[in-house]
Amino acid sequence: MNLKYMKIIEEIKLQLTNGSLIAGSKLPSVRQFSEQFSCSKNTVIKAYVELEKEHLIYSVPKSGYYVVNEIQSPTKENQVIDFFSAGPDKSFMPYVEFQHCMNQAVELYKEELFTYSDQQGLYSLRVQLVNYLQDLQVFTQPEKVVVVSGSQQAINLLVSMPFPNGKNNILMEQPTYFGFIESVTLHQATTFGIELSMDGIDLDCLEYMFRNNDIKFFYIIPRFHNPLGHCYTNSEKKKIVELAEKYDVYIVEDDFLGDLDTDAKSDPLFSFNPSGRVIYIKSFSKIFLPGLRIATVVLPTIMVNNFLRYKFSSDFNSSAISQGALEIYLKSGMFTNHLKKIKELYHTKINRLQEACELLLPANTYFTKPTSGFYLSIRLPEGVKAQKVVHMLYEQNVYVDDASRMFLPEYKKENLIRLSISQVNESQITTGVERLAHCITLIESRKSNAFSFSKGKFM
Image 1 (spheres, rainbow, N blue to C red):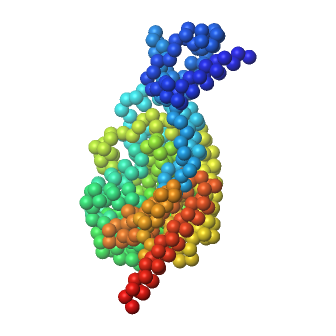
Image 2 (image 1 turned 180 degrees about the vertical axis):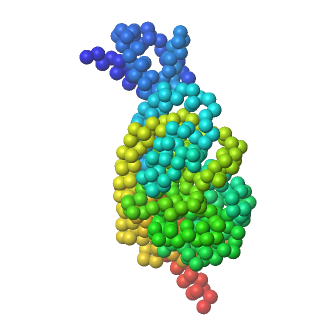
Image 3 (image 1 turned 90 degrees about the vertical axis):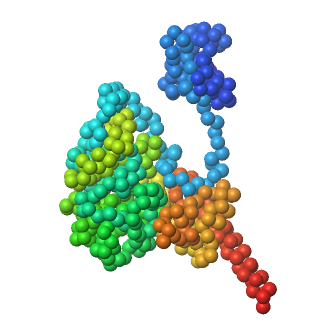
């Protein structure tokens, strides 16, 4: 068997890794390599074709072969315990499968993908999204579905646009997703908060807010809340929708992790929505490929045209090639198989994190107990500030998130940290919590010693 072409491939990859060949470099000619390796020109061409398939090089007719990009050397990422990052687990991203879908999309939709496409989103994708959403108990039609460039775009547009109820103010859980707080802040919207814990919200307080504060919409994350990990019960969701109907308030439901729900009987707020009261947002960034920048929003018919008008002023239409590839990925059943894998992965990780917290955290430290999802939050002991913990852990290569940015100013708490399990290696979870526990104990000890010294000095 002729393996010389493999040696040529290895040699080129070595040069791409060590920097001898960089992006844009011209490779040696076929004749030069055939002489260097004492092989036929066909052998060299075979090696170049294989490298082209890996998208490492490309050919220019009558000119030669050139480097697309150098190969990055391995980093020391495994030394970092990352409870901060909130994207999908990199080792479970379906790069190869989706690459096939991208190639298929280019073949099938040449004209649609490289010209201006339907502003509402490719119709064929919206049909597939309707089928996909049925599994989440969201029953709708393609005419009510809009494809957006990530859920953040949908949120930003909804914050800025008028609603059919003619109201102006926005209500949100406290704490909540930081990107939503950024949007309302930039648009200078009048906002109200309602406190959320793992026991839920006060429904009497919610009714008071709806009745008295001219609420345009209530932004809510009903499943695997960011940052708490809280999930509402079906009876709570039904009551929230009833109150919204009673007081003419819209609900913006951000169900970004709904796919990870292990409770088959758990339904979204949208399923309790007989009259178009709930606007449903579904992102693919956390469960699939963040760089795809595709999400979907299901709107009441009365709002579709106005939403599209605001979207037009933002970006006209979302990436057509991403839409075409996603349609094929959904239709082929690949996405369903992907979900089965990650559902088990994140459920296992969040359980591992809870077990470590139960075993290792100081007794006066409270942590939330989500059933799945990405997030678990820790309320630190009195006098221990999240910012201090974050900085101390960073020096030990443990990354956690200070959740103070997830509150409106009047609700701000400085003793809450958020842990995400999405990108941390499962084998590192216990070690990370050990360092966190030691950090909390050390800060408390220092505060206690400082208090004792101060008390002794002035007695």
